[in-house]
Length: 111
Length: 114
Image (tube, rainbow over all chains, first blue to last red; front, side, top):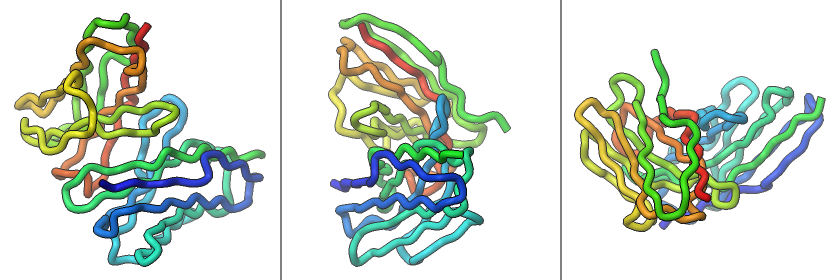
């Protein structure tokens, strides 16, 4: 089955700097790659997603890139703010199969 | 529009007991998925229900079971609790079958097994 590896597990950045989180997946048939943000005491919330027919997608300060050949995708957050501090999860799936999540990255934005 | 509601939010049980967790999805959503979240393993898929039918099942023992009612509300049950079952159990609803659309998560039910 699908296996998703996520790095780093923790990341600290200065406010205003950029943050990058990387994920690799094992199943070349996977075609849907969402990113979820989980704030303390809350459930995960979708922040951006990408499908395999697209190489990059942006939404304001957030962007996701996908390299199908290398089977990896990345989350980029620019101009980080303290409210970006949270745990971020990448995930992958194909067809109607369940999402397989990475183990998460705890991002701390230091003011 | 009300979000996904999970009850209870916190509960403490002892080994060998059983527990039932409840999830009310967003109105109109027919798909409900359950995930177990632990610090070491992240989010692991338990099962998904769509229109009262189990569509997918994760790699968990038979002690973990679930069901969905005609109003899309879902329950999951864990019997013969073990210490390792301590976790945050998250429910997510979606308007689409499978996990190819946005999942809306509840805040979870935190289970502690003593």
